[in-house]
Length: 402
Image 1 (cartoon, rainbow, N blue to C red):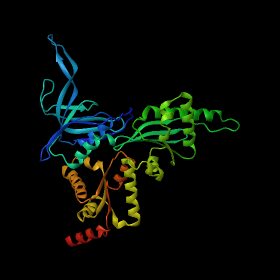
Image 2: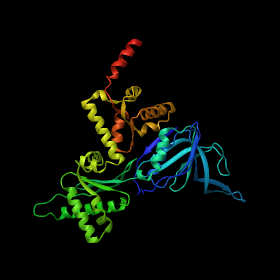
Image 3: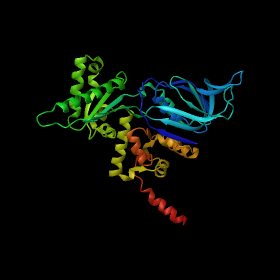
Image 4: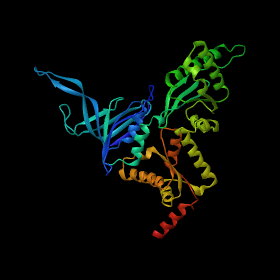
């Protein structure tokens, strides 16, 4: 039983909303839902819904052997619907592909009971997921996936001379859509022709990446970040070309472009861009910017009032027991834990904080801020009031036990 997270090159994602066709959950929290993934990000949501031991019913392709009347054996691929007991879940975060392996629970003419099969979930094809227990976290995930307001509304171009990363920032993921690399020769004394031609090729490639991968019907803001004047020179080139080519998409969406400083053109500089005060004020209603700000507030509290900033599940649980948690920061990675008691522990923590009036922010592990939170154990909290260092209490209790 395993779960793997892969990364490869990707294709363009669109932005419709996952459809909830049917929901039947009993009072004991057992039940099933039927969903239709309509865009690639929905596969990430589904990945976070699935757990080993769940039952998944979906349409799939099966290779079957056939024997003719003459006795010759051949094979053919047939489409059939199978119900699997989930054993292995593989998600490719860049191509947004989800494969689920398990044993067949309902025999049909092609597949015997107990036979292994791998289903690759497909866009626009429904699947039914049954669980023995639907908790608050997975139900919230379904609500988020099916909410049109939760879709991608921020794009970013992080660049330096010769390197650009075009990124979509959705509530659930940071998706690298294109990486542009062009060798830029140095300026030579008396002649800059080769340098300028290479820059034009670079800017043209970045422009094409923007047109191909950014859906301006959905994206509210395009952040363009770089060291120095690279961003300014690129924007100047972009809109000169837009005028020359009469590109209405770019010209009509010019107000959505926002220039901001970054220290490099690498993807990790995205956090720096999202932390910029001018950016956070403009993106105040986006989940990604909210996560960045919440993590920054935690670090500030840790620096100035360490008794009001806890991290690590044991410390945060004790703070929650004392009704002290004002804001809980928790990584969605923890809810993919296959040990049921461990996962239930994190769900109880979330429910406890919400029940006592606290705010819960579930960070995506595919955002830069989520990666940072994972380095802090995946759980942190800003407290309403200071609590003395709990490690002292733990030391005293352990000495008492001795």
